[in-house]
Length: 169
Image (cartoon, rainbow, N blue to C red; front, top):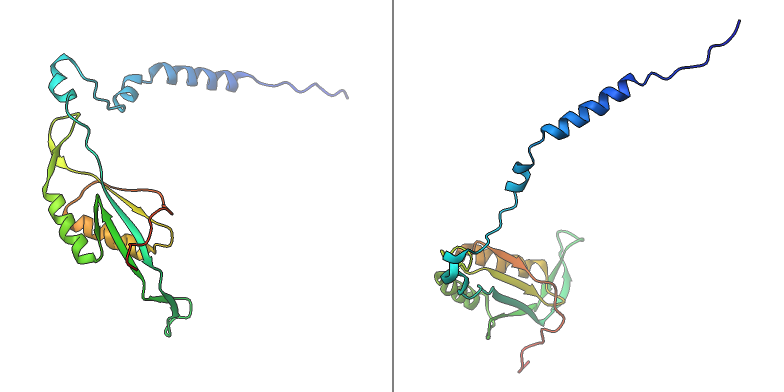
């Protein structure tokens, strides 16, 4: 009895190779190009290209006083911050209360600016930046106010340790 040497059948490998080749030849690459929506200016867009870019409205949340952590009696894993105080810098204005911030954001949301690429009017984008030591609750309250005021494009800046306490405290 002699043992025959095993033979490898290459037919399935060749079939798979040809199927891949046919698949790649039939793939419509123009659909992939259609996904890249880029506005390139033309000669007719000179007036639009002269438009100034839209700057984000900056809201900076600064820490006035961190407060004292007091354990929650109903849930030991939670703490309340007693005496926690923040301030808000909206452009050059320093606001000390949430009500002032809400009023100013509602005024700012009414102003529409021209989009430099399309020329259409739209609401100004807003960027929220938090200083070191700011709680999530402080940021989410500002986000809620911005949403309620009508801002549609809200971005978040990185944490900044440079926001100082307001003078006089």
